[in-house]
Length: 223
Image (cartoon, rainbow, N blue to C red):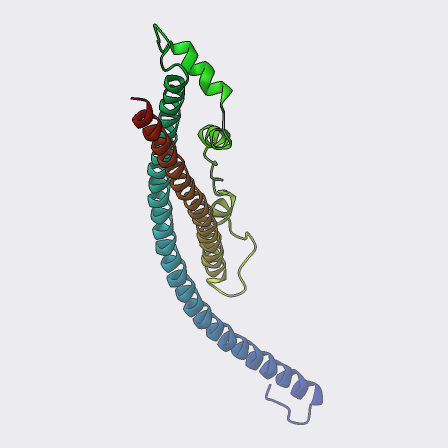
């Protein structure tokens, strides 16, 4: 049976079929363009994630270097405190020498030295004691929960092919940015702590120098 050009219903059905075909063809073109764009975005996101990963590794190496440097500074700080305490002991002995000069059978019993140290505590002594009792501040470990989320992906079907992989790359970018920010904050705290320790070392060394000079004057005077 041929096509009846006067059958309006048949004409309408043919038009609807043509419209549906055109719509499907248009949808396929749009989806193909979307797939191309998605693939391009995925490659860009992947490159950005890899670049951030390398930057994050450098950040962690810098943090380790700063931590090692901080340990050396703390060791030097401990040595400065011990030097000060020794200089104070020497000063106490020089005071006892001055007080007991001319006394028959003069000796320096160990308990007397400790007693003199406790009796004549200065403001510097108290400050040094606080410094020697300080504990190194513990650095907060970065939260690993973000990295575990990077492996998760949506279970629903993709409207555009590759969308889930792009989302995964974007989550990777977010996780790396968070890690870099955490390392930056950790380095800031380490820098402040080391600056304080260096200031403490300089101050303690000044106390030691002042104490040693006073001791030398007493010894020159009495010996």
